[in-house]
Image (cartoon, rainbow, N blue to C red; front, side, top):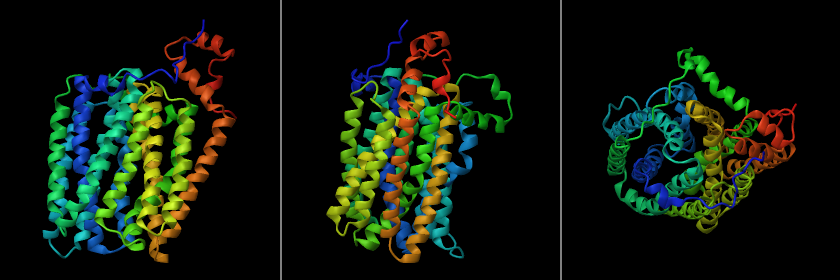
Length: 453
């Protein structure tokens, strides 16, 4: 009995079919509007803090605080994402972020015995904590709202939506923010309104997003947190994805922390140029998302994700040594494309390989792993740039780090025959072990699913 494999060339159902799905379209609409608000307020926050401090180290601290809650809390957040109604988790997160985002510009009017930037740091940390609940719940919910053959298209649409917002909003947002200085209050109000819309759209989803209760729900919290790590350890493809994420995270952290200091401090660019830079990266990212959405299954998805790291590495080096806006713009466009090339196969594979009752924990664990190393990169980049008085050297190191991670990744893919193992995992879904054994020619159907000694 042969296993029928999904063909990489089989066309995807497409975006139109997804958007006729009432529940998924509500999730998507909420994402679209909240992304618009977030794109504006994220730029405002960068310039708000930079205007208060004029410090690369302060920008690194801000970047760290935006991701630190993922490191601290995602372990137990993942457990509750797999226990509670994911729709309610996302709605509460939106409401909480609505309140906190408005407190950031109001920090100017709080008692001055504490520097204003410290208030901003506090509110940023609280905002990021609410964020840490939203995204594992959203990623874990997508397979409950679409068919399996629609996952690539759904993740592509999600990435394309984000990139479209990044393409269209930052140029306009940069102009808007330039006029809103120094407190940028209206930018944060726009984001708060967007979160209110998102919460309303999510609340109208009719399908239940509450995971089915399991026996391990009665186990101690620490044991349930460890279940996610156990799932990853037992699946070699997931193990590879986590390892590669760790390898690129430090470089990603350096890049994120030093983007604005490099543009303003080294290149002498401002809000409007940053807006067009982000738009350029999004434009190429949209093209990549559209191309990927046309396939029900991506060919060699691990190589696509790993190749994205190599492309990003070369582009970050070019970005670091660029001496004008044109050079930085071209490099950032390619970085935007690489980001989408990495995100779509990563999300799709995790949704395909992890069962629903464990999905929240595994997505949260990925957030912890990636963000922990990313925070280290932010700290390294911020301190390094502050000591040498320039962001060029740490950014150059970041690009080399991306490239080295990709080379290691390709060597592992070949040595461990990961695509062959992945094909067996996906093709054998729902089949009995003896069928898989006959199809692979192996007496032990698990032999290709374990890490080689």
